[in-house]
Length: 378
Ligand code: MG
Image (cartoon, rainbow, N blue to C red; front, side):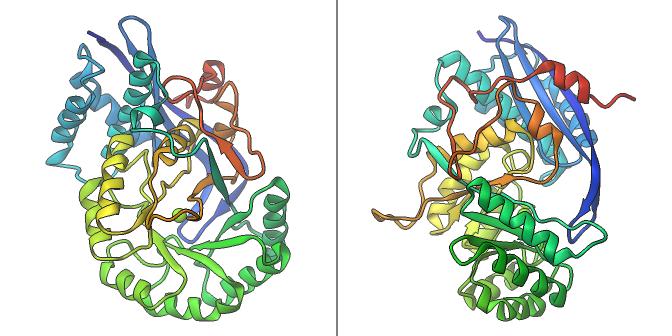
């Protein structure tokens, strides 16, 4: 038996030199909880939860006693037991981020025990490298915002990205000015997506789409509040721009709700919150039933990036045809030392692509000295 001997959460922090904001609030630091699971024979797995790190850490501490001493390869049974513990209190939200972090670490361990990359264990690798898009263009105080965003967008293009995503949700006039500046800077050969982080209502979202017609927006992410399923469906039905979202949705039930109501063209669960790699795999099946595409949301460290690279490698897109466009994976480029420093060897961007790891498990190695350096000390 591959007995779990310890489950240790690490709450990490990176103070930002320059705070930034988006449509909802400001960040002055990045705080992320990662987890290390160790087996009796010394094999280690790493996972990461998405959302307020302090609460993810508490959740992991709550779940850990349930798993200590049990067989890591009984993975689905462990998942079900964690879910039963969450069920009465937390069928959505941060406790599921704790579950997700543990699930990701269990996949890492399973891969190491079976000496296979996670993507193979998921069923196989459809692609060896994943096309990335840059997420950035948050807002900072002072200066000429359209100009700042335009030069940031151009810097991503110069790094090799052929798709970039910018924030909107500041009010329609401001958004239009920002998008116009960015589109002008990057030209027409780069895909441009916008993300409102659920800042608008249906009428505002419709108006924004109309006012951005000339700027060839590829997708509009989280235009509305997540619970406005009817609004999403109506917006999607009447828009040529892809309507996408789902990073605030949890478990297969949330995925079913959003996709069965035809809310989005691409569903975007966060692997570190929605139930882990196991649940995203389930959501992939649900997406097919509803003729919807799926691509995970990514806003964390190299652990989350690795988890999503394996999922993207295994992902089957719809509809089927020989020259289907490649699915795009998110690469957060906003300031975050935790993303840059925790891996012994960071992921490299080559012509806008990142290679899917080929070694066992998630295929990453963590720098424990850096973990110690970023540990939030009481
Ligand atoms: Mg988003």
